[in-house]
Length: 537
Image (cartoon, rainbow, N blue to C red; front, side, top):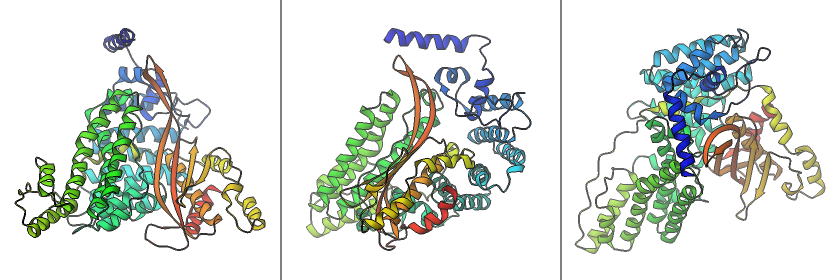
């Protein structure tokens, strides 16, 4: 097997070095915007193309190669003058590549050209909430990087208002607005929409508040541990720029940091065993993700996150417990050598340490000086470019919901004869949606969609959650945890991935039903149905 694998690498390298190796028409189109080559009699928006690891090696993986593919595709006579939406789609892909290469003037020129190409779609509902939102977010990113922060924030806010229940849009808009904050600006209000659909945003909001953190509130937000890691690293990313690997490392580290922050809050509020149990659960989740993945690069990322993020935070949790148990020497030893930044959590640790030291009179060592924390700024936000590329949506996208949605009206009529008993068991499930009642009273609502629009799946799952709340006679619900997945069809050879095709998305929400609003992040079931129902019914 090793010799066979080596033969493939040698063959690939020979092909790279061979003169005259060029991409064909199909590779130009798929290499630019990821779709198939257009045909003469359609609108040009032809399905998701498979991404070949070998062709990717031949073409390269950087922005320059993508721009070259887009240039060839846009000049290709197979792209008909009438296929304006596909032309805009290609221009948008080239704009994204220009953003990654930090050529912001060229990016804005492509965004302008894309919007001009689809002038006929202007004002159409489904176009505006997908391609229109995407172009707004891309323009916001370019303007921000050029220093026009006010215009960038306004565009991001407008995009967020278009799709309040799509986490992909809300996360991107929050990042852009946060990056455009003036000095001394308040971060928390920017998460207002995001906190309703993403529990991790609530924990981030708590941790970012100035002054002493409300550790009791943070500990109370613990709930069931939910760690969502990014998709396995593909061969394409392995061969790409170092910035791709750095970005992946960040996306792995973020959920671990958030989960460990709650572990610290549990420790600081006296829930020592619960804190340790959560730490071990997080460790097991990281190890399982690395152990069950055949991709060696993904395993390496899991190891780096363990070493650089998990272990230091685990030591902080143990140090906090040691302080409560009057073991100051142990606590000091755990933090020695760490370069800790001044922040709400480290201030709590140091304050607790000094309080116990003063009260007990222990001859404990001084803790290392804290590093002054820089203000919240988001540098190099061009790494979010790919999340801004929402696929164009049309009314035909809604067939997924119509086919997957249970017969709500029939179930409600049946409920009248069952004296209001739970309707969940009485609704016949088709492929797509599924609801499961948990032992703690929460309900897991999930949707698996074949659409390649992540925001559509995210919205449909929230809508179904609102329906479940209404079926149970509850006016509100809270998203306790969520998981979002991309689904791929992959092909392997000799144990290595040779191609992958995006086939759909899946979202899982764990919700708690409420009789009335209890917190700002609680969702009004009727309001959700009023907002999303007219779109998907």
